[in-house]
Length: 163
Image (cartoon, rainbow, N blue to C red; front, side, top):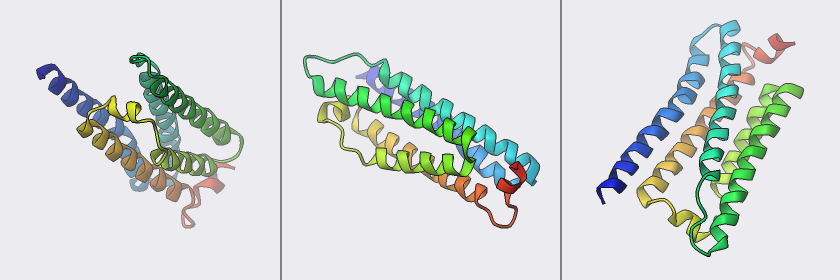
């Protein structure tokens, strides 16, 4: 019981620490001048992709539990979707526009939040940790919306400065 509580507390701490740079960068972009804001926005995109790769790596490292294949299929699908979102987001970022990339990432993360996973996949985590993961995903969606608003800001027009 004690080790489960320690795992829960350390997981909460790590999740909050891992989302803090995204929150900090998405807020900092609004309090800087435009040339530095663009660099900060690029750093946010790099951190976002690294965050997705670490989350998918953690979920990919989970062991198959028992004979139930529904957990393994859900976990593999989730890891694959996170990696696909990350790679596609980077390709869109490099090829087209940062705004399209952030918009694509926001849409995918928002839809992934509402995807129905198997019961065994959800039962892998305690209820309080699932609630925390839900909070973190909401915070990540808010950060993505803030960054999308930055790229589409009609007053400073950071996209025109990239060209």
